[in-house]
Image (cartoon, rainbow, N blue to C red; front, side):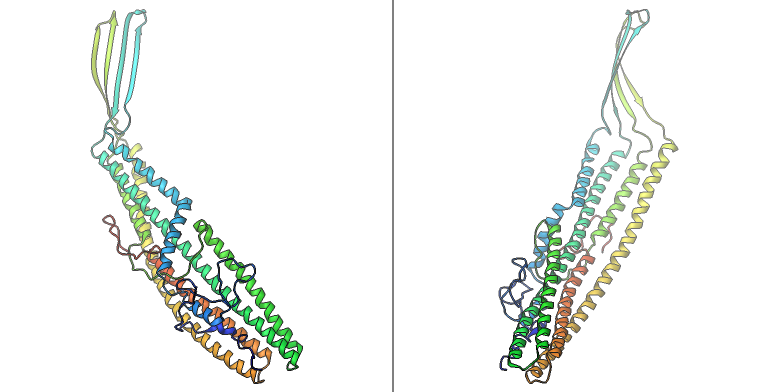
Length: 461
């Protein structure tokens, strides 16, 4: 009985305390190393969750490093964010809107608020075309109203700035999608490692049960119990592999083919949230539009110069020159709808700014609280893992001494496996909680957010 489950009942070899100072296993990625139980199972993705038959302890220590900040993870996420932005239809639309707003600067740079116009006329006498003739050619152009040109230029600047801030907000939204997908893949990867270690030890348990049946030490139902445990582990591993593949494919869809990496972000410094900047820029754009409406109480006047030629039996013969001025008059029918629309947009933008400020502050508080709860749960999960490991070691000794049945040992294994799965999820939840806090603070991956130096009047975060 000298080889009574030394590896088989290391079922919680994957249950080693995450607090152990084992660090990243050899050959594992930075911050999330792992030595799995059985190499790459059939159907697993090449390059994912590989490792030798190194036992579960290394795997559990690696799970403990899931939420440890890594210097590489933010850089990888930042590169993936750029790829996601390049593929995002909304980002392309916002960039087009920004360029459309910038193109309006051609109007404010122009000498006239519109296009020159050329007109002409020819008139003849009813007595015959050769009796009297008159021809006229005119060149006219609209004129800027006082203060209108500078008001137009300001709306261009504010609209471009608003489009820039909305583009920055869209980048943050994509960052949130990437962060969620990144940690979903990390969770599925950790769960697959747990199930792979479970399958490895379940196979050793079957071998040990078969040896004992051959020696007559246990009955055949014990062998069937061990075989059932192995089949159950195979099923759980297949389901975990499918979930991991789905998570990786979802991430690849966002990034255009890039796989999620490993590691966690550092906690960002609080700064000016892109949602606040976008809302404040919208207020400034609305204010600029109100000023433009006020500076344009009438349609643009028009000034024209003409040349007239008269010939034949007319009072005046020869060529004459003249100017013509057209000035529209203000009217409530024209101005009130425009003023009301501009003021309504300003009121709406101001209300959105106040609402966004409340929402971003509340989101940061919620994310901070959620991270604290996740860290508390992580401590409890590690404690439970330690107890489960001790329980398994005690059960192993009792089984070797003949004081425990295989049924009881399998039940202890299940407790250990559940503790390992919970511990892995707790580690992921800490990393995800930190990522969500950075998201709530408005920090893109890989950036240490500092108070932004935006346009005057934009509130801080």
